[in-house]
Length: 226
Image (tube, rainbow, N blue to C red; front, side, top):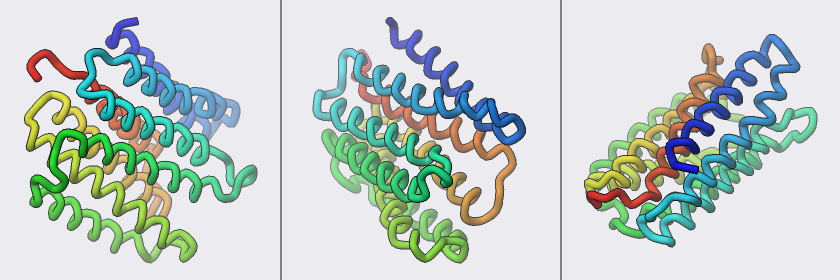
């Protein structure tokens, strides 16, 4: 199966997962689409990265694959109804924290940490602003986990930007945009949960999330010009 065909399946599965989440607000049975296709989309992205050839490096690919697996576990925890598993959000948060550690490990295989300091300063400033706005709405039990998660997310995103600017390659650009999309998705999720409801939040959050994962997975490939 070609990379293009795998990408088509990812798009279809993601659309079904998003449709299930959106329609599930009005039609309870539609929620099953979300439960089935949300993890299935992430699994398909995993195989997309796994079958990529040629790869930047085996170490880079393995770290990205580990991050996608952690994201899959996070997907399952986050979509678990609170009536079934009360700690689903916290476990999902920790799973994605591990995912960002894996992604950061990949991004450090071929570029210096904070090679572009301005990227780190800019992303840190944005993170501080968002956290200060969200802080009053955070439950006390989640404050420390959320701060830890935000630090890892911002670090991963800043390193993706720094790596992209250092390498100036297709892989670097894909991971750079993927990191920014991940930050956008998580920012929307946080505002929707802890600040104020966002209209069509599943569409906005999941579309940016799946785009982020797909771009990060695509960055595994070594393109001819590199």
